[in-house]
Length: 185
Image (tube, rainbow, N blue to C red):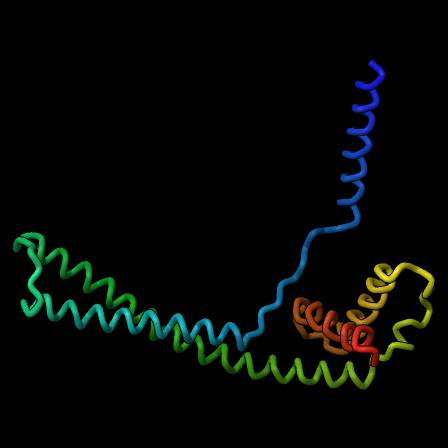
């Protein structure tokens, strides 16, 4: 009987601990994808759609002119031709629209790359190990020091680059921390 009560209290304590843990985290990790990578993906997708649409239209023209005969009766051949023609036209239009969208993403990617370069140069000149360690109890475990230092880096970047995306700041906070502490600068 006593073992059963012990198990219940251990389960209750474990459940209570996990509930308390969630009070301190919001489990939101901003994800950052460079616009230059997004641009490459869009161009690749646009090229694929355009290629499939053009090849499909070419093959459809060969089928319609009976150069490539398909064993379809005449009552269903028009349905096949019109549906496939519509699909290939949609692929071509989607490819063209994606290329137009890629132009805007390329412009935004160039601006983002300039911002990243500016951010890295500014941080190298203005964020130092001594400044980050100022006011910290260096006898704390390295994990706690990491979070405190990363918060300081993030605050400085957010203050200096107010219009920057939070995910971008979070991504480069980690990189700046590594440059300062793990590369022993």
